[in-house]
Each structure stands twice: as C-alpha cells, then as structure tokens.
Length: 421
Image (cartoon, rainbow, N blue to C red; front, side, top):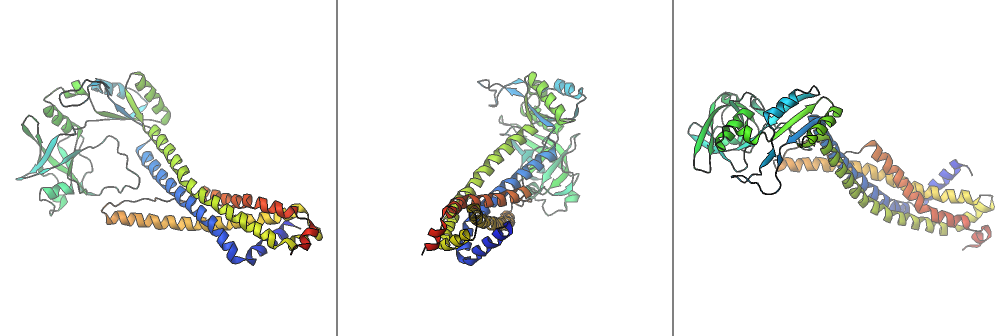
C-alpha cells in the first residue's frame, strides 16, 4: 500500500461518517481557536510596546538622584536627596563624546496649587512636562495640536495649554490660532498663605480634555524657587531627572556602568523593554495553556473516535491483512486518519481565531471611542509562526491521540478479524 493509497483511504474513511468526524474536529477547533486568539493578543500588545520604546530610542538612559531610605524628610514631606543631579554632572556628561543628547527635567510638587489666569477668569490647572522622554502607551492615540507648538519653547516665557483649560477660562469658542501669544498668568498658592503670579504667553494648544498647562524647564525652576523660597534651588536639590541619549546601545551600556559606579540611580530603556517582554512571554504562556487544556480534551475525543472506528472496521482490517497489508501499514492508516482530524481542526481553528481577533479588535476600539477614550493600534496580531505552530500542534495532537487505536488495529489477527461480527 503506497502513501498515496493510505491518504486516499484515510480521507474516504473520514468522510464516511461526516457527522462524527465533524463533532470530533470541533474539539480541536475550539482549542486551536483559543490558543491563536490568546497568543495573538499577547503578540499585539508586545509589538505595540516594543514600537513605543523603539520610537523613543533604546539607547536612552534615565538618571535619578539618590534619596535616603530611612528618615531624613524635609519640611514638605519629601525624601532628602543624598546624591544630587547638578549642573556639574551635566557638564561631565556633555564632555563625553559617546553622548549625543542630555535633557534635564524638574517636577513640580504633587501638592502644589496652581491656577491659570486670563483677564478676569481663573481656572485650576495641572502642571505638565514636557517630560524629557515621552513613551507613548500601547494603542495610545497621539494628541492633536490645535494651534502652535506641542511643547513650550526651551528658552521659557511660553506655555502649552489644553482645550480643557481654555474651557475653564471661557475661551473655548475662540479660534485657537487667535489665542497664540495671548498673555496669561501662572498663579501659585503657597501653604504659607502667599500667592505669586508668573506672566507667560500661550505658545501652543493641544486637544486634551483635562485642564493642563505645560511649562519649560526655566519657568518650572522659577516656580520651584519661589515655592521653596530658595533662590539656589538647583544647588540644594538638583534636577529630578536627566535623560541621556547615547550614540549606540553599546555606548549606553558603558555609560550605565560609569554612572552606577559613581553611585547614581540609572534606568535603561532597554532593560525596561526586556522586563516588559519577559512579562508578556509569561502572559502568553498562561493564555496559551487555556487552549492547551481544550486540546487535551479534544485529544480524548479523537482517541475515542478512532477506537470506535477500529471496532466498526474490524472485518475491513482483516481483509486488508489477508491481502497482504503489513501491521505497519494498518497502523499508518489509522495514524494518518487521526492526524487529518487534527490538521482539519487546526486549519479551521486558526482561521476562526484570526477572524475573531479582527472582530474583537474592531469592537474594542469602537467601545473605547464610545467611552471618549480613542486609541489606535492592533490588539490581536496573528504572526506567520503562530499559524505554523498551531497547525503543527493540532496535527501532533491528532497523531498522538491516534497512536493507541492504531496499535490496537495493527495487533488484530486476520482470522479473528474476519470472524468478528
């Protein structure tokens, strides 16, 4: 019996009982569909996360001041910094030829009360960046710039306000372009009861519902000097963060070692990405195990179907052996039938998993848009290797499930099989 004859005979036997073959295949379909859908979700999130980090540059480093772990709290309840990020450190970093960009950053205290005043209107606002390195979240929709610049000018004197803040100032109906250059005041209210206004101009407007105002580094320093009543704020507290962009990943590794040896706290984006990817691999494994459990149940169904086929075709097996079919050929025939069931379930399950992923991706994006949380991206990504792995795995499950029934069929004696009623 040639392999072509084996394949033709196996296919004929499967189509002989279409309903039973279809019901047996459903178990494999459910398992493969679950695996493809779950793993494609993990791939989609991982890919979006990697793209977000790559868009920033994995050769970037975040440098933070070292704080005391026990005790040592200042008047405002903030940890005392034992090693500062100073201008002297900035000069050392600028002197290195393996660094292409250095961006310092200052944060305003979390409890600070800040308002924006335009004419006789005043509204609460949350102070923002611009952050030294902005890593967009997976599936995050980029903010629309209504007018002007996205970030305040580096030299200071300008602020980027949100559409939500303009609404609080009763300016939402005006043409955004006509508001550029308009004078506004940043008003601080200190816990000691004092207030201070800092005049700025509107340099840009972004489409953001939350009332926010983005300030340049020099303007933030001016606010901090008044807030802490400390003209030498940088000398006493230093910067809150410094982002260093190296020429290459190899240079970034050397810079991390150099800064760590000096006692600074350094965080590399590549390390963050590696940790995130490791977590996604664990998540994918957990999600795929759900489909694996469904396939285990399906394999029992395949084995049951093939055992029933052995009983029903006992005489047929006896005739095949009587005309010269070897036990190995009988065994191969039943293994091929079981593998075909697995392969068929794998093909249908993979296709349905891909369709389900596309449908869920569309549905999730529409729901988020309906909830005023517009995002973009692909949650479910069916990679080519996932398709191949699903088909191979499904076929392997069918093959393993058919080994015992195939061995049972191969052991039948011709005379006993022919006498079987």
